[in-house]
Length: 443
Figure 1 (spheres, helix red, strand yellow):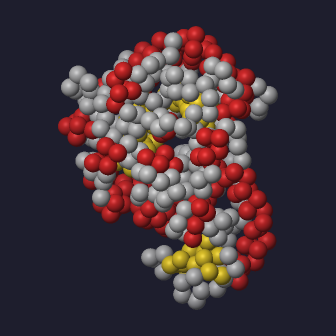
Figure 2 (cartoon, one colour):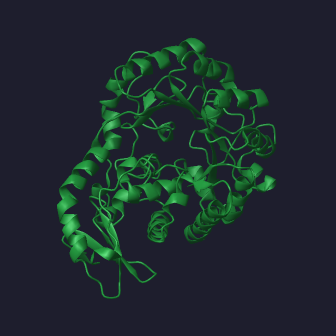
Figure 3 (cartoon, one colour):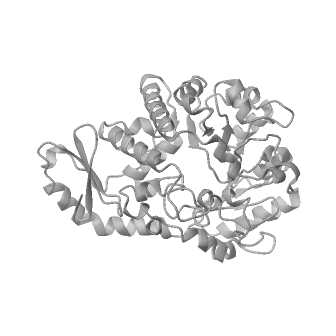
């Protein structure tokens, strides 16, 4: 039911959520003796300002990061990868002159801006061209760099180099059970990445710039709470528990049961919260933390998959090993999404290209069911590439009910005063309240 643009939604602990889906204004009030007077007063005072902020956040084109895929090739053969097998086996790779020209192109785009360029080396296995990546990190030391890897090629000296240069590092690990992990992340030589990835995680020894990425599939869906405990024991500060993307058709074989995933994910969130509150160091679930931010500070969220339009071709783009600029790496296996080649086109030209505009045109207002959903600007109906791979970009998320359930859980934990432990330590210190309603204000 609605009331002056506010929808009212019962939560399961004797509370009601009042929410404006468009501005993301919200309040939680007791269901018994429900009174909305003060909520409505504050809402009416702030609605236009909040709508303006959300409009800019959703539709502004402000590039903050560039993903570079320096090689198509991979030494693993993960059965759900969004990059087609033939590319991972026989694809091209950059050499130093090409990578340097790409970085100079990025540098040119960011000249005069008030922040340094952010570059993340990504795609198949970037450390197959480790020499040029490390050279780039040294020579372009005014950039901020990130690296996503399966960890198999990391040596202790590499870890020291990455820490010394404050590089953000993501290591892929799908299970605490070696057999399950290696089945999901098999190497081309018959072994998986478990042993080497765990060794690398231990070498990082609590490094604040480390993330572990776990892709949720039907094979590991029940392992999530134990995975959190396992990573916390190695002082990993952040894990992303990402539902498998079904961008390529073969990945559907690994799709987890949605109800099972929802229960396991919420148990993992609660376990991470317990560990963070009861020990000297915390572990957060990065994609859940982003949902929390989407509620308490909507324009401060960092992962841009859960806003509509998503960040692809707007806040970030990907440069492939062949130099093509595409909205997001998830589009690597599809034709028709290149905004030009970085060797002969500028980043501005790519951002204003028709393929990029095509991706930005996908928004929740144009998706059936999403257009009336209370959580449409918290969830964002990810992901356009995944939906395109499934035949229609304009359809709701594959895991719609999962997202609704974890958003409701986020509201419960926020209401319980647990926000501090759900985000990176100190993250809230520099934020100020736009509004703050409490039961002492006539609710």
